[in-house]
Image (cartoon, rainbow, N blue to C red; front, side, top):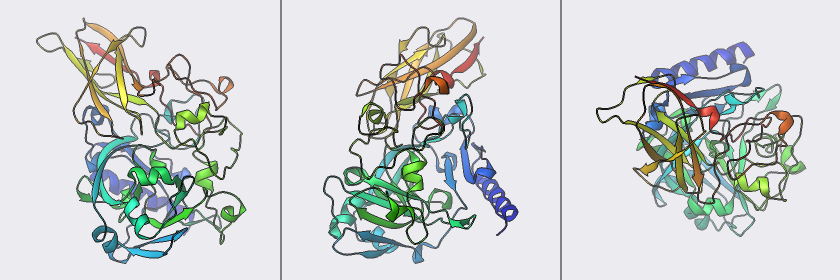
Length: 423
């Protein structure tokens, strides 16, 4: 297939997704080979559950739409019994669970970096919350006698591997076994519906509380390993490079730096990795603490209720950690007031928050900042490249979030400000 034909196919795919997703907009760069559709406005973040048709989409290469009855997932590596699992077996021979998960693209907020970094220029639209139904990986691994000791990993390989410039573009991610056993599933439904093709039908890995890159779509292989994909064995395995999306891409580092490849790490929290001597350039695993205002909309003119109140509403999340506090500022961060949480409260899913605001007429800049259970609070700004070392982040909101070449894991609050006029 020629490049022009491939680009035209991508355009048709994105148009088809947009036809089904009234609340979304395309923000893709076709030259970078990503298919992406994100929230079109902030109303997504004034509600707890994101409808399937509004859930953000991001993946490389063309969307697969395979027949479920012919799909298999190979379980290989350090197991007593290797197996090719059919979808009927995955659904029917193991327990079924539903997990709530706020999925956020690791590049969410990249569009606020100055200077601009490469790839898709997401602003706030690449985060969504849904219920995912599937099979606990703990059950599958136990049934096959998998090695699950501390330090083991599970590598998921996606089925989308087109040939690009003479090489296969294989997508693989390694997830620590401790996380796999905790709450990860092989998901085949979202919000009670079968997975649509753009979400990885018929089955994807679902890693609650972690950046979306870890939840591999169209899973074809699960390999139990004593390390991540790393080293010569995996950089050229039968002509495929399994390491690219684990060791090079989706790492947080300054411009022009190639991150060191690691066989294994023991620190999985993305923020903790900044403070660890073990890892120089963090992996994008656990989601950083973050919040987004859903109402009012940016640029809106709003009128208080009869009691003089405008209720500011939004969401806050912190990956694997609980989000424990939310503050709202109506003067661009000069002063703060406490908001309150309400609504559903699930592990690895965002919390709705509200703040009753009694403003006078005028123009205002609204921002929110969240704090997680470890006391880590959103920073104010994104640094400039000259001020960022790619390896340091603050924990008390007093410093900047480090500019990094990939534009990953952004959680500063000022870039997400909402400008409103009160009449």
